[in-house]
Image 1: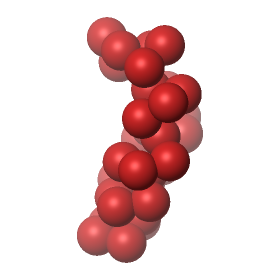
Image 2: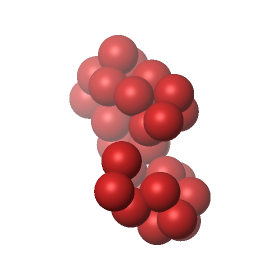
Image 3: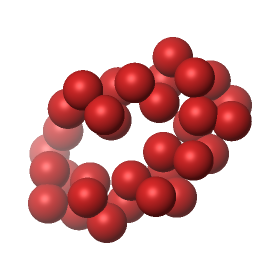
Length: 32
């Protein structure tokens, strides 16, 4: 949310981990 710019760079790792842990959580970063 606050790290909108960093989100792009942080997505690959965070997004993949969240997707594996909770698919619902993976939708959060994508929506934001």
